[in-house]
Amino acid sequence: MNKATIIGNPGKKTEVKAAPEGSILLSTSVATIIQWKNNNAGGKKTAAHRFNILDGRDKVKIIREA
Image: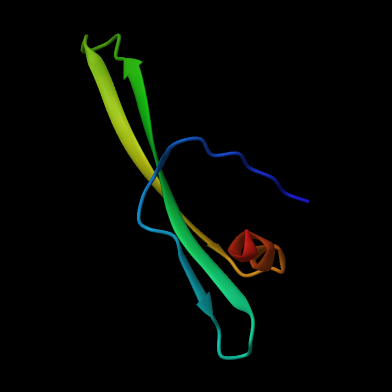
């Protein structure tokens, strides 16, 4: 099992949809910001990353019912 923990700010509104074959799809996004000091140029650098998350497994049914 592969596992990743992403801690950040929620992005777009979470969407739960039913696929034509009857499965349930969950779509959401998380935004993270990284800040560091640039020793060569001096000063602070910032980079933002957005993670789009799509899940269609059985556990989505549990999230939808909660």
